[in-house]
Image (cartoon, rainbow, N blue to C red; front, side, top):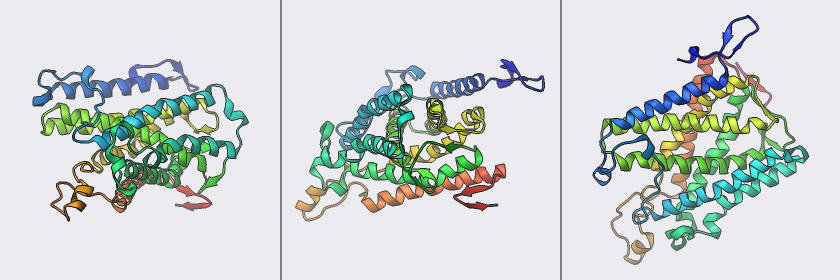
Length: 340
């Protein structure tokens, strides 16, 4: 399918495919498979009046009655998203970065991450969240932010070196660095990933709530993860392409192969974050304490459980990235050390 598109001739006289055609073919193919998978679904009893349609495949927020904490967190994440995107668009569009120092990058990225990081403390009850009635360590927003923060740290500290080694990526802007990764990116990743996972939660919830359980829904669930992972990775690579201080040896390869490589992150994190702390609104800590302890109707997730879950996701992703690297037989360079 891809080979049918050709828009220019290479140095050897052979016709080559433009990356925009290649990406269009990949994305259209994924959309077609997604539409086909949706068409075979059986609507759930609650949505039987609406037949399966690619047009109705839109993100769904958690139920206000059953999951008010997750609902409030996701609404907050989605409401803040246009703000940080607009800030980045202005910085890149007006080339404000040309006057940035390493400290400026830190101030901008830390500042944009604070509305997420401080929300569990400063605005725990936003959007009717029950979090305001819980100890800060038991709030869903606290645990969700901790999960994303750990995942973001692991991604920057370790995974970035796979992009350095496999895709020959590099950051050339002035930066204070930790393990040869700009510190500002550790914070920027937090608000990027908070947005990505709010959207992925909505899409996966759409699958679960719209269609009857069974192998067909499971197939759609898996393919939704695959498609949205690749799409998310590609869109980030595309939108950041106007920033000249993040470069690749072969940008066309970064769009096609690199998006699949980056998408490995989300193959693991999207489903894990979707199922994370599902029972936060089922377990009523205060009621149990007043009653002297009662039977729990859901699984209790503590901060340590959050750390373990996020670290577990991080380790799985690290293994998958390394399996790909070994398959490609690319040496891994971390700092000044080279592993052959």
